[in-house]
Structures are given as C-alpha cells and as structure tokens.
Length: 191
Ligand code: SF4
Image (cartoon, rainbow, N blue to C red):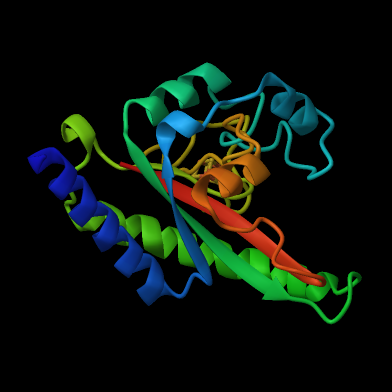
C-alpha cells in the first residue's frame, strides 16, 4: 500500500514536470501492457528515417530489443509524453521538422528534470527513458568512429527499443493521431 502511494506521488511529480515543460499530451501506462516486437527492427532496417547505422542510439548499434523489454518490466508504470504539431496541410514539412526539434528540446529538458528530481522508482531503480527518433545530442553522432560521448544521457527511441508507438499510446489511453494535419512525437519514462 505504501509502495502504491510512493509510486503515485512519483507519477504525479513526473506529470507536473511534463505539464510545466509544455507537452500537449501525457498518459499513464502499466509496463505489463507493453511488449517489444521483432518486426519493428525490420522497419528500422528499411531505413526510411535515414538513421539506421548512423547513431549509437539506433540499430544495429543499440541493444537487442529483449534488453529494453527487461528494463521496462523491472519498473511498474510509465508516463508517455507527446508533442503535437499542427500543419497547414500534409505537405507542411517545415512544421513537421519544427515539431520534431521542439519535441527533442522538450524531452531533453524533461529527462534532465526527472533525473534531478530524485524520485522514488520501483525497487530503488532509476527512471528509464525511451524517446522519439534518433539521439541528436551531438551533431554529428560519433558513430561508428568513436565511442558515444554521453552514454548516460543518450536516449534510445521507443521504436529502436522495439515498441510499436501506436500500441504504447493505446496502452497509455492517449491518441497516436490527433486528427487531420497533425503530427505527434512520443516518448516516455518508466519508473
Ligand atoms: S550522445 Fe552523441 S555520440 Fe552518443 S548517441 Fe547521442 S549523438 Fe551519438
């Protein structure tokens, strides 16, 4: 019971941080509802995002999907955060790019604030982060010529970890698609 109260206050603290940072949407998810899928790695290998083989945070350099499942399952709950952009039309690539950059900026601030908040997580573990898209802390990424510069802060995306983002959103009770001419970027933290 006491553990539930602690978890609840951790989740509320994270939601407050997410709200202050400005994410348009947040949702809670029980980690037992989430499963990695090997076919997500096949989609990464198709390289439609042009990041496959270009970052320590992406396949084939990042860890096997089973290890992400393990990290998640050691924790009980997650908070999913979203940036939602509104485009003029479906060819509004400028808004798509701006929204992605905004999400990345917000997510890094969010991760820093959650790390610094000293929140209590399941079994005394640290919060575990999975973001959106390839890590862009350095430009360019040092992959493959030198080790990652910030291995403790580098964030792997939900997709690279093997999760289907639509499934994560459904499990968190939030939309993946916020309507016509919108674009959403989704990340999470697990505690
Ligand atoms: S922290 Fe830098 S070196 Fe490491 S994955 Fe991210 S961009 Fe690459």
